[in-house]
Image (cartoon, rainbow, N blue to C red):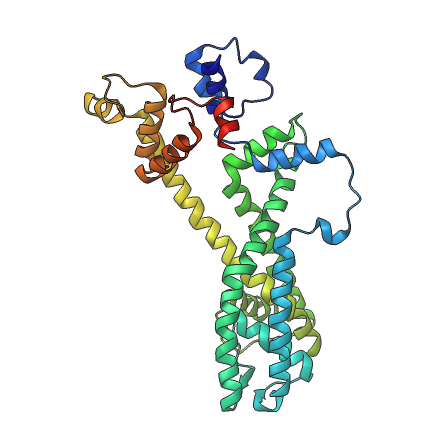
Length: 346
C-alpha cells in the first residue's frame, strides 16, 4: 500500500483525460505518461473557471509587475522631467514647450536614441544627463523588458486561441501547444506589433512632421534601432507628444524581437542536440555510466536521469539538491516517500 502511494507522489500530475485508467496501465509505461509539474497557466485557468465570476477592483486585476513597473517609470520620468525642466535654459537645440521638452529629453536619453536636437549645454545639465542615461538603461533592460515580455505572453495566448478556433481544443491542449512553441509564437506577436509601430511612425512623421515617406521611414529606423543620427527627428509639439510614447514602445519591442530570435536559435540547437542524443545507439559504456546505484542494471528512472544529463537539461549539482530534498522528506528512511512521510515532514 505504501509503495503504491509513493509511486503516486513521485509520478506527479497525470493527464486528466487518462487519469481514470491509471491503475490499469502497465507499470513500465507510467513514467511515460507523467509530468514533472502542472502547468502554472493551466492551474490558474482551471482555478478561475472553478471560482466563477469575480468582483475585484480594476487595480486588483492588474499584474503586480505592472504596478511596480508603472511606479518605477513614473518616479523616473517625474524626477527627470523636474530636473531637466529646471535646467531647461541650459539645454540648447530645437525647443517647443518647456515641460514637454523635458519629458521628451528624458525618453530620448533613457532609450539612448540621442537625436542631438536637444543637448545639455552646461556642467550641471551634462552631469544630470550622465546620471539619467545609466539609470534609464537599467530601467529599460531590467524592468520594462519584463513587462513587455508579459504583455507578449498574453497576446501569444490570444494568437494560439485564434489559430485553434476552428478546432475543438481545450485549454489544456492550447497551453501545451504554447509550452512547446512559445518562442515561435512570441516572435510572431512581437513582429506584428513592431510592423504596426513602424508603419504608424512612418505615417505620423509624413503627415505631422511633413517628411517624405523615405525620410519618415529613415527616421523610424534610426529611432527604433537607437542609431539616432539626428538629421531627422521630432521637432513639432504634437510630434514630441507622440514620440514620448512611440520611442519607448518601439525601442523595447525591437530589443525583445531580437532577444526572441536569439532564444529561438538557441532552442533549435538544443532540440537538435536532444534529437541526436535520443537517436544515438547505446553502448556498454553508456549503460555503466547510467547505472547510478551500481547494481548491474539500469532502471527507467536511472535511464531518464542519464539522458537528461546528456542533453544538458540537468547537472550533477541539480541531482544532488533534489536528492537532499528527498532525504529530508523521507522521514522514516525507507528509501520511498509515502503520505505519512509528507505529513511528518510538515
